[in-house]
Amino acid sequence: MKNLKKTAIILAGLAIIGFGFIQQTKITIIGSDTMVILAQRWAEIYMKKNPTVNIQVTGGGSGVGLAALINGTTDIANSSRPIKPTEVQKLKDRYNTLGVEIPCAKDGITIFLNESNKVKELTTKQLSDIYSGKVTNWKDVGGDDAPIKLYGRENSSGTYAFFKEEVVKADYAASCQTLPGTAAVVNAVKKDKYGIGYGGAAYASGVKHCAVKKDDKSKGIVPTPETIAKNEYPITRYLYLYMRNRPTGEIKKYVDWILSPEGQKIITEVGYFPVK
Image (cartoon, rainbow, N blue to C red; front, top):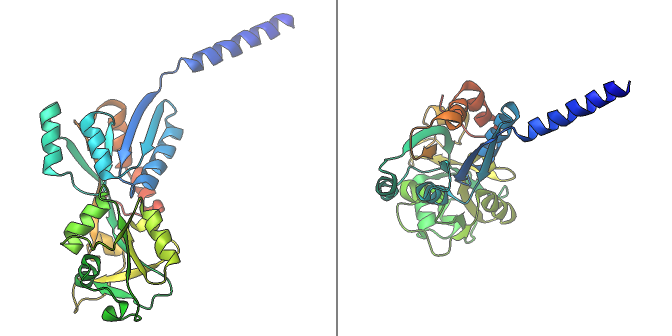
């Protein structure tokens, strides 16, 4: 009996030692706050299935992620906007590569209104006028006689850049309060009857979705899997993974899994829209 106990203790000790020597592959991901919830969910599920892979996800904004990619401090940059030519040039100068862009999901930038706001839909022109400061009172777009309170993202955000280029098409009004993440924008609008904000569809909880019209004659559309898939929602965009070079090894396995039916199914569960 004593020998059996000794053998069991030795085997347990060897198992512990062996476990300690299992090498983990670390994958670092930095970037878009819009994509943080999705990226963390992907990482959690993948690591459960692949315990030798350690995936670390950090937000900060698309610009922060792409800067980290250029500086060599991340393996993957998450971005809610396409990479800029100046960023591509920096990759070329430092690594002699143009980088690799992989669209991994789709998003409809959602317009958040307080639930008590009687405005239900806005055209993209009205959104431009509101966020550029030309329209400052809700009565001018069918609402109460009350000043419009603007909430938006910081300029390191890909959502900030995309919304500015595709919708505002001018400088943001100086009165627009910039906040560090879409969750903060949603919380601000939730507490402010006359607030308006924008951000990724996955964060739209406790606020009203404003339907968006391409022009005065168009039908108001809200972002849904169907309207995004058919490109009917006017403010639709891709979400991207960026790498310095074509992925290999564990990073390639992870990216392939994200693009697989299993990875794409998680996108829908989180509140975004698959690309496949």
